[in-house]
Image (tube, rainbow, N blue to C red):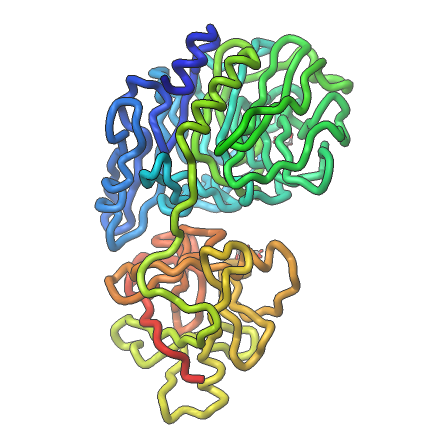
Length: 481
Ligand code: AHR
Ligand code: AHR
């Protein structure tokens, strides 16, 4: 049985079931998600390999080979049509045209389930999905349950990495107008024990870890690589539960009355569905979503415990984030452009600016050193890499406002994330494209001989689709120095 078969037998059926990794019903054979590729703008649906099975990741890889792909739709498997699509502007605008949020890269979150490759939804700041016309979701004070399987190492403190019930207008319409799972280390409202990240409930104008609107010590920091986050709510009762989605059982972190401040009892749920954003389209948060559902009715703990066992049996595990030319930690490399007319240029720096300069064996020692980079284990994720300047030890290539710059390692989580890159087989077939770990839609790209992390056809000038594949493909060789 799948998670939604279990909820159905508990008389709290799924009214929305979202996953890019697997079918959530035993009999489900329909589409799991849709991807759109950069080369020609066409889309394709990715379905399970068999009824109730794992997503056909190979079909995605084939469709997306030598180009970029975005996840455009996360289909609802419940039959209600509660699909998640690119979120529109609300109280806040997203970064895309007309204020829409970004879509996620299709390859930012590779995993295996029972040894078979699949992809989750890696959501950078600015990314969001929603459905403001969902059917069957709880409204008013009606009861509902939900869970989401997330990456416990990918989070931040911005508002708000949510999955669940929110406003149909994408604006803040007041306390109690949403009820969603929150995951991250935001402390602007509530918090739990330790320094986070925490599973909390976003009930609008507050992230709640228990009945107090502030700190509740019963809600622990939780950061398993795969986290199962559970929130449920009904008339004057609600609960937060959580656990390791790869082993063991769920614990209850809060179960009791609604918050002790006004506006949350009774609730005024509106029944839209959001993923990766707050109720008002606040979109600064980051996180990774693999699967999740929303139910009609308040699931029993026993039902949720059976769902947890089902998730553990799916055997989520990590998969490589890199491909193509292997890099050796500690070695010095240089990276040569492959765009016609630019093939004598290498990634170098002039002060803090990362640029594309003509370098050769007869260049000065100073320039050779400016164009040489020591390979380090990724500062935010050791499955990827960071690039330390040979002539300025302690300084790394990072992105800031999507430009590449040379910056000292200040030890912050943001710098570590901004300085972590995952090389993959080059989009134009030449050795390597260097994907940003934290913004996997974006790659090292030269544009007018300055380096950026660029997306294929995005809103910035340097995101231009013209010559994108060549501009993001590099030949990696032994460093000049
Ligand atoms: O409740 C926390 C956040 O507050 C909501 O997600 C958002 O709508 C508002 O800014
Ligand atoms: O480069 C994009 C973002 O811009 C980085 O993550 C952040 O450091 C800067 O604000």
